[in-house]
Amino acid sequence: MTATRVLVLNSGSSSVKYQLLEMADGSRLAAGIVERIGEKQSRISHSPLASGGERRERAEEFANHEAALRAVSRELETDGYGLEDPRLAAIGHRVVHGGQAFTRPTLVDDAVLAEIERLIPLAPLHNPANLEGITTARTLNPRVPQVAVFDTAFHTTMPEHAARYALDAATADEHRVRRYGFHGTSHAYVSRKAAELLGKDPSEANVIVLHLGNGASASAVRAGRCVDTSMGLTPLEGLVMGTRSGDVDPAVVFHLVRVAGMSVDGVDELLNKRSGLMGLCGDNDMREIHRRVEEGDEAAKLAFDVYVHRLKKYIGAYCAVLGRVDAVAFTAGVGENSAPVRRAALEGMEGLGLRLDDARNEARPQGPDSGKPRLISPEGARVAVAVVPTDEELEIAQQTYALVSEEGPGARR
Ligand code: ADP
Image 1: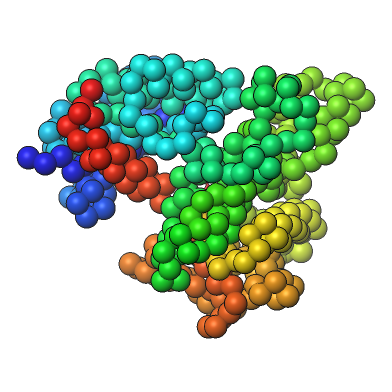
Image 2: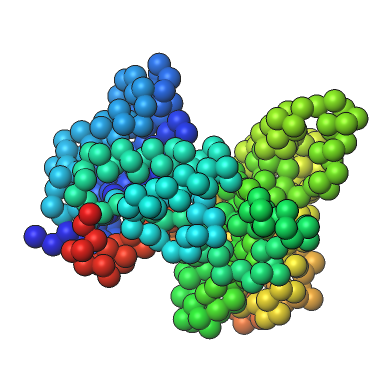
């Protein structure tokens, strides 16, 4: 029996999201999430997608990731997809930080685990949970290959002048301070899909990708390779996000510590959790902000304007970085759904060849077309503007499957 299925695991600090995909046709067999791991009210929600069965939800105390993954395994078994199933080719894990070491998806062994551990200081919230997911999955099924797919990997092609901060070089090197970038799986997938939409090979297209979810980042992709991105050492830099400030003068931190008497941890929390749209107007959901703007709410209008102004600056900067732009691609929750954000971000940029077709921008495709990439620029525009729904799970599954297919049975460790 050929092994053509991939289980994708995204292990966060208190949740595990998973999808089981059939790589023969890219279909999803099952998906679910375990939430509030480590709390009394943890729960699992599982959807048996292939059979079209009802979603199953269960509250149970999952003390740790191992308990959570055992529950995932039981749910999958109920649908006939146990982790022992010989049709399972591999488990693909999302890993947030791969530093400079990991430039591509990597088959997990003890040395790889040790390196991911060494990167914990660069991603203290994410890498420990990602590691726990991998070690638990290995315990549950030691025979199936485990593949780590890194959020940073797509950005490792950035030239040194884009990755370097203008800091004392010895200090930066000693402490590994540089631009790493995140959301790489999404930027890779969306830039490739945007090129396909234009009928081009990714190696022939220059694309600006705007991943606008709760976290948000932009990237400049030349001929399929990332040449710049807005997130930096951590996901805090760059665009205005749901609760993160994005770019600020670094001296804001000194000011808040020295003058306002805040602790470093307090400033960290302020910039990551109480800033961005939330800090500006008290809401981090763009839908709510649109509703408030309609009602004439000034704080919401300012939050929207600050968000869009930053976005416009990055689009302009990446036009300059790329020189020639073939496509601008909007993706993730805000990018895929908010016509007002797309319109405002591109307003007045005709001089750079960026134009929108209002009817296309406002259209909301339904049914099977809703998940497909679509153009929102007018026919014949110099730069194509597109909405490209992202699919990080599919990308992780494809990268995982490609790696284990390439490695052959030797991949089974
Ligand atoms: P995450 O970064 O958590 O994966 P998503 O990519 O799912 O986030 O994006 C979530 C955000 O998308 C929400 O917070 C909301 O602001 C935005 N969003 C979702 N639907 C809409 C919509 N119809 N209009 C505007 N914004 C939307």
